[in-house]
Image (cartoon, rainbow, N blue to C red):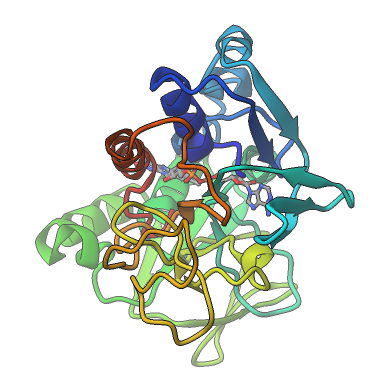
Length: 321
Ligand SMILES: Cc1cc2nc3c(=O)[nH]c(=O)nc-3n(C[C@H](O)[C@H](O)[C@H](O)COP(=O)(O)OP(=O)(O)OC[C@H]3O[C@@H](n4cnc5c(N)ncnc54)[C@H](O)[C@@H]3O)c2cc1C
């Protein structure tokens, strides 16, 4: 589940490791897997057409011999029945399941319309609204907010960048480098305001925690992300800040309160389990009883290699992105 970087890396790894069974990749977006980093850079700046984002050509996707279903969201997971429940009411049966449904942007409360920047459609919607003299308020000066602010300023927009921390990106790059980045924003005419909390998005802009209204034509909220795990909520999988996994990236499941790593059913990994720390991309594998070894007929060492490969290809710290 999930037809983006992680899902693609998983199906490519499986084919490379010799899996020749049916592979179904299902994603909520209508686009074939595409690269997100250019969204806040070349796409927002109108330097690239979006057809450059494709992670693989249609020929490469065809060569994977996938049952590729786009524009189809999962709404539930039936572990016992070994099927994903889809928004169109159908079910996708599986022997092995890879959860690669990623994250979505956190939002602010309020009545006003605000942009977020996660998908190609988000980027195109924001790009359409940016122009010389337009007033853009960006909430959050993490990597994504800082990039969008810089690009918008380059397009001639009047940009206000709001950040609750005293130094932007101090937590990620240290205060010394953060201060250099802050100076660069100011030099380029971005109105960077640090130590500022935002309470809500309004029709007129954003309301700060101290009550001040910062007026804007457009608001971009870039305050981090949340894992897309709602569809797993009733499944029995252990879900915290993402899918809780063991050391093989295999999802932990069972009755609430079960100790991590304590296998209650045949076919689950019995080894000491850990949360996929540093992995908030909601990517993991699920095996349900009676379960064939996954990916069949691989050996456990191949499975470990596939799990490691998944972790390496898909699980970078997400921070604000
Ligand atoms: C604007 C932007 C800029 C970035 N810049 C950088 C950068 O410069 N460097 C860097 O290293 N990283 C960057 N990143 C982060 C990088 O893009 C992510 O780490 C990467 O996309 C994670 O891939 P993923 O497949 O795990 O999840 P995602 O890309 O989030 O993909 C998950 C997919 O699952 C789908 N999905 C979600 N829920 C469901 C459901 N219920 N049913 C079916 N499908 C579902 C989603 O629609 C999505 O297509 C950036 C991200 C963004 C948004």
